[in-house]
Length: 210
Image (cartoon, rainbow, N blue to C red; front, side):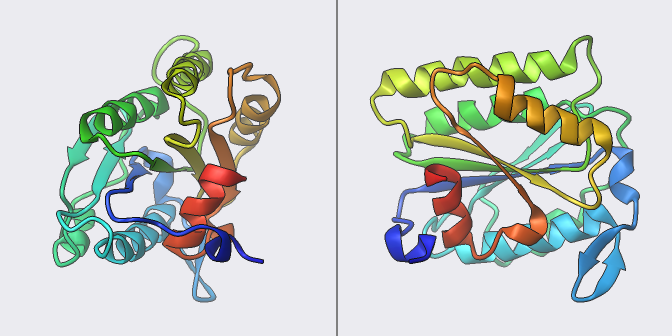
């Protein structure tokens, strides 16, 4: 039985799509319909697909985050505006502030009042830009996990790390560390390659229930 057979998105559920805009996302080692494309292009294609699919659940449109040295928030991204907004995102930042993207997504989830939110975080590298950047991300996730547990709904918020392109050793080590050494009260993190995530419904269910 597939994830989509076991679980359905409901109107009012939320998803937030975060795209890494650091300079390394310009590397052309991602696959799209049998061709090599840049990582940022691959991420934008998946973003467009999911935003369009999400229109039937979120009538005002999902939220898009572009993160690198900072986070740029695009709220209420409607189906007809998705491609134009994604087209504005350029991969040129010198840092990957993953912590800021996660914290912003959590704040948006709390403000929305949604019963279930998934942050799809597309990235090609480990967190950088501040001292102990990886530990800051882990602390951010641990803090959120504690609040999710206290809410009584352990499926209310999940983070799906989605790797784009060929992951470097630093990213692989970081994601392994998240899996093995996070020490959070509950597990709210899922890790997949972009090639492994299917429809929005399947990816949403997998992030919440894997």
